[in-house]
Structure formats: structure tokens, C-alpha cells
Length: 190
Image 1 (cartoon, helix red, strand yellow):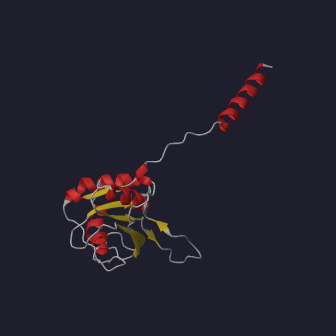
Image 2: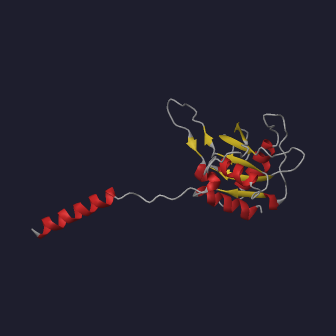
């Protein structure tokens, strides 16, 4: 009987916990679209010419704030795993409020090595190799390959993209292995 009561109590407790609503957290105002705030644009391209990670293909998204002027160098933020955390909306709001300098965001997905025969195999994901390595490969990849490729692009209205070379105008971030990658890149190429 004691076992039955204990079992029923445990079942009831588990059921009660399962029905308890999960906590919700208020969104930060910076991550909510706000009326009157100019919206930047996002350009996308596929990068397949890496000499540092040969044989890989990846998507790169470039966020360009509405306030960007081609006659001034822009700050740059690089993020692994593509666009995360409503970054374009956050950038729009903070740049408009002058709480952040005019910053071009470069959002890079991890590389994939395409399967030689897609009917027989899947693409190989290169994320762990690129992000978790402790050498200088990813920093060189960003500095020598991706950022120069970004500067070859133009906005939809024809403005050239010019990124600051000053280390104080550059940032890199990510989450999980993307954060490991960001730390390693910043440590090796401040």
C-alpha cells in the first residue's frame, strides 16, 4: 500500500509540474520593431571559394543600416551561425537611438562540403571543425576571405561597402561553439 501511495503521489506531482506554466521573460525593447525606426537591408551571397576551408560552401548575410553612408567607414560585427537574436531589428533600434555606432553586420553560416553523390550521401557539416578549432584558421578566414568579399558588394541602391580596419570598430560574437570561435578569433586577431 505504501508503494501504491508513493507511486500515486509521484505521478500526481509529475502531472502537476507538467501543467505548471513555464516562466516567460519580457522581450527587450531593442528587439522589438519600433515605429519610425529606419530599417536596414540584408544582402545575401553564397561563398564557395575558400582557400582556408577548401571545398566548403556557405551563406553569408550582410546587414546594412539605413544610416550607412559610403563615404565613411562602418564598424563591423561578425556572427557565426547566420542571423540570430533578431540582430537586424536590434541594430536598427540601437543605431537609430545613437546607442550604437553605424555597424554593418556580417552573419556567416558554417561551411558544408557537398556530397559527391547526393543520392548516396548527405553533405558534411564543417561547423565543429571551423568553430571549435583553437588555431588562427577562422580569424584568417574572416579577415582574408569573407570581409574582402563583403567589400566587393554594393547595397541595393549602389553604395559601396567600406569596413573599418580599426580593431576598436570590430566585434565578433556567437553562441555555443560559435562563441568559442568568436573568443578564439578575437584572442588571436584582436
